[in-house]
Length: 90
Image (cartoon, rainbow, N blue to C red):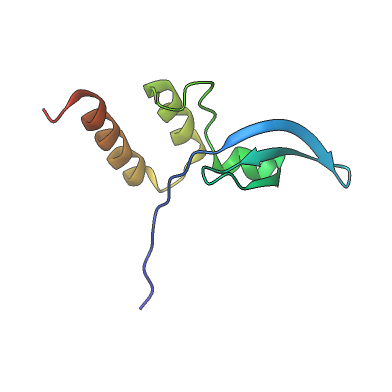
């Protein structure tokens, strides 16, 4: 039986660079692994957080929601979890 999962990971974009004439980014994952990702693939999958990896704002979530289609219930759940984590359960 198949099931769906939602994953969340934070990556560090080290620099913008081209490979084989295609724009992309050199990225580092939390375990230290460094890789390259095509620009359009990365920008569709990740939300730019700026320099503070511990801060998620409503504006960031709004940008993420604008990228999503019918998965808005997932975003609503994430908003709840993030607010709960930042402000405590109310």
